[in-house]
Length: 305
Image (cartoon, rainbow, N blue to C red; front, side, top):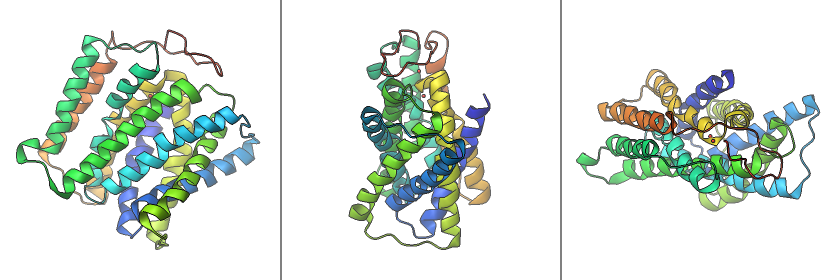
């Protein structure tokens, strides 16, 4: 679908933009704050033009706080920190693990999700792919391992967030724009409280860093989350998360061509194994159809990020 393809390109470019902002001296949690802040500005403007009212339900805002933490505040911070130690290419490859972590959380949160032998084999192959990307035969340790683990932690948060969104948030009253705006407002507030504690006072970046944050926020966080919520509503959380195994293609392209980052053989081989693992989890016998869930209702036993 067009939204799925556009989402993969936008998010694929995000890793290079994060690296640019970090290179301009913006601290990791402030990078996360900046992308959420500019995302709120973009979505707020769209809400005004469309005259979309933000949901007033206390339950919606409560769930939005959880979704914002899992899909924005925590993974954005982990990812930005990870990219202080690893390349944007490697960060993009690790992001492809998201569908596998999403499946694990969906099995726990979405009743109609089932663990089949094919899905189990997919999870196993994907895990082997992560080990190859890490280059475990070379020994583990150092800054690159810390950065890699931070990137993997971001995928765990995303996996939990996609499943939580499908179960508790995506079916609530309000347009995709309004719900995405609420989500990013909550994430911006969370990060405004967290960033000074972890990274101290913010540093105002130069024009290059500010432009990277503005594009990352308005396009890669604002517009992208409208597309993301629409995909979740139409296809379910597991299918929506499979956009992340297309993302490494774009992140590798942007990282190698625009930032001249190195590309090792084990990164390529490991990425292929991760993608194969994801495909296995989505193969016939491991997928169930999806129907939108009414507000406040339990998911019907027919549905997946």
